[in-house]
Image (cartoon, rainbow over all chains, first blue to last red; front, side, top):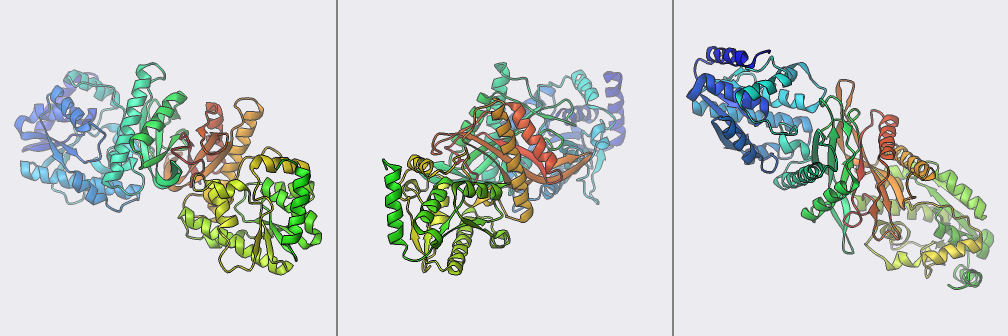
Length: 315
Length: 315
């Protein structure tokens, strides 16, 4: 793509051809799907509807943040609140791949219901070239494959439309600038959300713990970056581990959960280095997590593995 | 205890009264039980036998190290090889307290068998005052309680004899010097051995992984201390976590285990601070563990929690 204006014209024309009736757009709040939603709306107007699913597995403040992004970008959108549904689907599941399959199935089910209610037979997605070309290597592409692409069950009535499928990430950024989509510095967040940051069983309590721990890691890393104590990492987050450990309260031994903190430097997520934040930043993170989740989380670990041999995400 | 020579004379006299026949001594290679073994041998001569149990859950090189200590101290000893027996007893057990109970039961069973073979009706232990006075706070005292003291089942024929039960640690050190027992700088090692450094199921493979990881942590910390890169910590070890994670080999995602590395500074183990080793030391530890256990361990975490709120040991 050399000319975003030309690409926009052609994409709009193609969308009008590919969508004779109505379409819903799977909008995650990421730059790809936001660009796809805006193009679709320009092409189809009222015949398009962007659907954002609140899975209950989102980061703290994510629904508000994505809503603001859509409003600033001029995307009309609808929020589907489906936290109970996702938690029910994940009950008792510990296998990471099975978690992804169930989340993918829920997404598709929800999009089908929304399409039916709206009278749409097309599902627009923000799939880009690396989602097709990369595979297996890193979680992010696998995730997109799972719940945006590969997750479409055989036999669904929805026809997939992918206006960005030939673009690379830097081309999407150019396009987004052209379309007037704000691009705040946002670190990557996995499609299945906090479900893959909750190792072991996914329950409302455990998702809440992972959400609190993630918010603390984000706050403290962003504070340290703002105070120039460390360079801005590629990604930083917390994982609630699927095993228990022992702590001390007063004179008593207490059982509790453990959290792993991951902060990595990377250029393209294909390889990554465990970051070296100042000891004081890690100490504050450990202190806040065990205090704000007192009686629940008693131990905090810092992931010191590069990629390879570890992935960036835990599972 | 003001005078170790006087204490030694009185302890020997008391042992001769308390053991009319034969006694075996539970010898772990620690300073307490080594001092108890030496006193008992001086009191009873051939009527005493020190028994060292190779549980299969010991650190790399531990059997050789303890053997050398006994020989230098002049303690006659016998090694009971019981690795299979301990692994069998631990098969399928994941609860840490249940692991301790089963290990304690194996110890007692072994000591009873050894006593029977030797014709002894007394079991001498190196219990010291803090083993009785502290309780619940930290693992080390609980452990001793479990498999040295509290682990004696009701109905056993063995009568416990505890020649050091009124001494504190510094008094035992004075006594050991007087008795000519070498006291190399040795960090504390839990009584149940690597079983409590293997979170989750204890299998031969998982014990081997924990042993390799522990040896790497010991080597690299000791090297860094020798090179004056960091002060000598109170304790440093690795734990094989009871949950799995994902790694990358070439283009493939692979599942594997995770190891937590714990290095703490402390004065008395009642409180402790997560140490701050140089980043290069942690990087080397992570790199060696994932390379020397390639295909088995894909991720290494560094425990950044103080005590409290976490304990020193994982479980």
